[in-house]
Image (tube, rainbow, N blue to C red; front, side):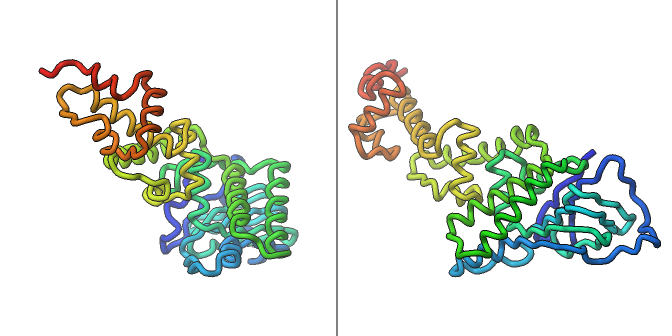
Length: 311
């Protein structure tokens, strides 16, 4: 059994996903339980705050652009919804947006609260080939194992300690944030096969169409990343997974294919090989000829000579 990730952190009402053990039943909050509204022990890791520390010149994100992952480490908690109450156990993670959900905790409860920027969570989805929020994402309802929980808590503790002990470089923060986001998503046991064939593949198809429509232009990696809404690092991962090459190599290959098709098509009037090469952005003609021959086995001038006679 599974449930969805919140579709967008910008929505006004709280939306949440929680892994609930298969045997856990919805119930009314026991009157004799006497749970508190706050856990006995709570640890916080705010990746927003860490981002503001390492990149103070950037405007801080608004609170609506974040997810909060609440990791129950020990004890018990009860989640109240409008319809019922659900008991949570150690190893279960509640991922929410907007207003904090109403939880009651046992006297021995321990909790980690992790605030994750939406951008980091989405980049983690792209890097791992998982579906983005709002694309039919599913998680298992079973809690993670004790070992998995210990590993997650260890990572959260290390990142929290590191961020508090010294000034963290911006580049190092990015690694920390992605490590935390990837670990959270992995612990939630996302449906990787479905997302690999749907989410990342759909994104790559959009990128292919974008490149094809601008094939004669100078398409930069920066521009592609902006179009896809990804960091350059995440963009490289998408191309590695889907095309087994880098964005630059993929664009160059597509341009060469268009040059080859143009030179070999008798219906297309060609002034010269140089004119076609320049039309597709190849300004270093010697290098262009080498790339062309390594791709198609003949020189571009030979392709032009070998084209069938026009009708």
